[in-house]
Amino acid sequence: QNQQLNAELDEACFSGCGKPIGLHVNAGLTGALASVERPAVQGIGLYRSEIPFMLHSHFLTESEQFKLYQKVMRSAKGKPVVMRTLDAGGDKPLTYFPMAEANPFLGWRGIRLTLDHPEMLLVQLKAMLRAGVGQGPLSILLPMVSQLSEVERTRHYLEQAVTELKEEYGEQLQAPKLGVMLEIPAMMFQLAALADCVDFISVGSNDLTQYLLAVDRNNPAVSELFDRFHPAVLTALNHIAEQCQTLELPFSICGELAGDPLAVMLLLGMGYYQLSMNPGNLGKVNHLIRRVECADMQRLVQSALSCQSGTQVRDLCLQELNRLQ
Ligand code: PEP
Ligand code: MG
Image 1 (cartoon, protein in one colour):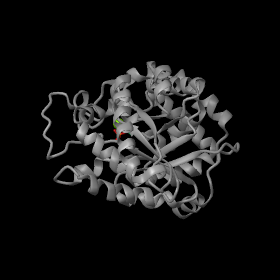
Image 2 (cartoon, helix red, strand yellow; image 1 turned 90 degrees about the vertical axis):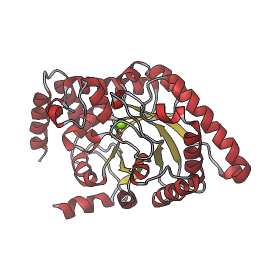
Image 3 (cartoon, protein in one colour; image 1 turned 135 degrees about the vertical axis):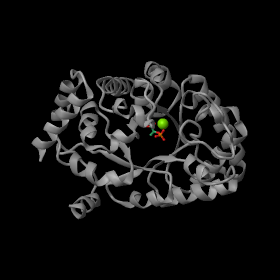
């Protein structure tokens, strides 16, 4: 069966009703990059830049970052790449950058930390831009955004980085698209304003679930409460998709939900047609998508939204999956 799943990645991905679906890969370690070559995979939907920072014992220099990002850009061979700026803090500590906090997940994480250290942000943006020269379209994604001002402040550094590098690279240097992770619930209510200041959003369903349900995503004591299928999570995802469609704001999803076939049925029904996932999930998600009709999935979403628990939602999705097979 694995062989069949693998062979199915040799062709572009369409739903059973003919809708083109963008499958993208999440990467952070270079091992994950090989799958971007598969014809069904449209690009790298999330490059978690903090992973190499966690594996080193020092803050990477601009030239070290450049080499790394260049490897990533080259591996994509002209397909689009979304690079996320450093999402350190929370569950991703840097040993050489001590952060003692009572509530790390509500504290100095992601864009909050890098905006407090613009020298780190600027170096990273420059290394990413340099790596993008002559390679496939590069987009930059900001983690943990909870204020529109964080986007504006980052844009300022991005423009500074572009200006500084233009002298060296001239017209070869393209200004990247700028997007934010939709992972802090408050941002669901500022989508109209976000649409005016970003080019796209990418839903981080892992953190969105954690912050919506107030459940630590890594704490085994409460792991049963960390329910990605909780009806409130689905309502949130549906709201985001509806709003983005109305606002014509391009949207995708890169949390673990995008790699779970049961959830993918719901995501397709809501209108998420750009999915980024760990390489190991590409085969089964692609296999499923080729067999579903979007209209059936829309009906499934309507039933799921009236469920009272994540267990009910899962059961409903399982029934639908069995019907498909
Ligand atoms: C997320 O929060 O869903 C996400 C994709 O980012 P990370 O898992 O790296 O926090
Ligand atoms: Mg996240």
